[in-house]
Length: 392
Image (cartoon, rainbow, N blue to C red; front, top):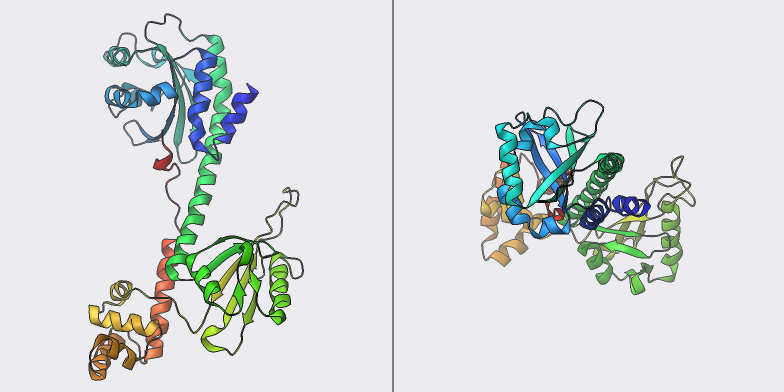
């Protein structure tokens, strides 16, 4: 039993392991099929939103889904109001269907068609009024009903299944939030990287790598962020140490400018460390540091499509505005596009009016601020708790 529980809890981080866990359960109970399902309620019954299957059920999934595992499954209607009997967390079809009712006869015919027989189902509640069910079936023709020992095993497993599902939802939400934040930083062109207090890089987006590769002040040799100038090395080491909490307390952002006064070549670095360990964590707080890199003279590229959508600009006006945000002058843009400076000024005047800006610099600030807000808002949500890509 301990091996089964160990593998069960490992599924919180690696849901693909459910198939092996259900295979173990099939072997232990002598059943042909073991399926784990999560349901939502829609007012009429239960709606499956996630499932994992043992190897046999997975191999025959197309036939099972066609005949039984679909919206016409009689269990979805009858199990919604009566998931279990008083004092019991495990039920059989005979416990919840009226004897020889039309629905029970239909269910038995469907089970026979996919070569499944006697069954038992364990239930447990999840947050947001969801419900998780563990459904096991003997092979068709196996005369042994699932007995008291089988029911006890399922009943003892359900609290662990329930807790594992809750952990799986929380971990998946954390992963999705991290993915969204990474995607947002990439979309905005912000140079973002994670490293430890010694500068060993664990992740960096393309913008950060581009800044480091082109900088005359930074390098990432051997996977470690380094300052090229001897005078900057102590400053960078101090920045990482401070952000990690060795000096000023974790969570306080600290800044460093390399090449101050060097125009487009200088690099601004904002460092944020992990918050202090909370009580009960045994001091196991992460010691990573988040670095945001920026080269003021090399602004991130702005999408003309996004500018047009935000401010109602024409295609020509949006292209001009995006170019100005990217650092081009009016004359440079006109030369690149093969238009007169006068035409470019007319487009700029219209863009200023539509964005309610008085000067070109105000227009650029409004565009950059609006795009930053838009991308941050998109990155604030959490996706589905049970990712379809991990279904079995």
